Image 1 (cartoon, rainbow, N blue to C red):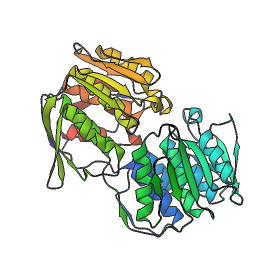
Image 2 (tube, helix red, strand yellow):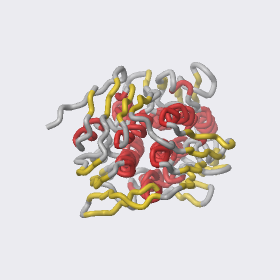
Image 3 (spheres, rainbow, N blue to C red):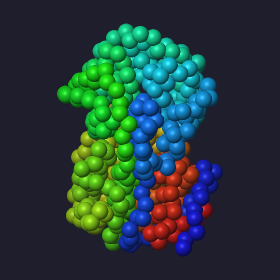
Length: 415
């Protein structure tokens, strides 16, 4: 049995080139997007539901620990979903809490959500810079309005946070989404999960309508995470030979990142359901790909690296939200892709071109910028070159067993 890799933020990890990949991933992390929503809904339903296969990602473990915490100060660390959902949850449940996080979290805006909550009747006070954490939820008075206009092109987590608390509002809530609607599958996911717990949320065009209702406890088992699965698609795409089996994934998933199946068909990966396992095999490769990542921004880094390594030109839109993630992911991608002779050029504020590498170096070391997706997006390059990943412990945010899973497939790793 391979020794266990327990990487920290202070180390680096070396991956030796391995061009053939065959095996079954015995485990994939459960979806943290679903887990975090289910935890909020369960709390609003009285914490009486039977929940199975919750994610062991740090974001979800934080949510699990903090949602019922008696502490006055709630430290969400670097978990954006946890910050946004708990801000709405503590507001509607009249809990006085100070919400704070890492230095990067204090640079991630929350003003649009706070403004909406204040319009509804919440009292929230900023403790530092206006529009950014840390902030304090104080109380919720009588509902002031049942209609909120909110930009559709901001994080869907703001919209989902408001949707989940809406049934508790005496007048219910109608959200009018203005402009381009980003990450729509995550809004649809929230509505579907609310329905599972007995609440109706109507999503038609640019309006979400949720009457005042009561959540009902229900049993729920969380499916595997398609964002985590995307890295195995990348390994399959870049390896010379590959047959990979992934467990507990459904092709008709609630998760927006299941779109990786369609995207990766262009990049040389075929996916097929085989008796409860998803089988990934090599397929035909396109010379160029055009893709709008508005609905699946978390796939962008992975796709960019695969295109760069395989000589595929990419024409991308819908990357705007990457600027305000765990790091400025566009800037980080540009810097790290140049190490392998590729680039991500910004044609204008809405269009980017992935310029692929004409020849990969024998080895390179990649920074992760305290961003779990940077680490996992660049790791599959080890199918074509020796790779060093700096601060590999960042994967704990969403896929804490990532490095051990790689080792179980025979990829030589050392710290």
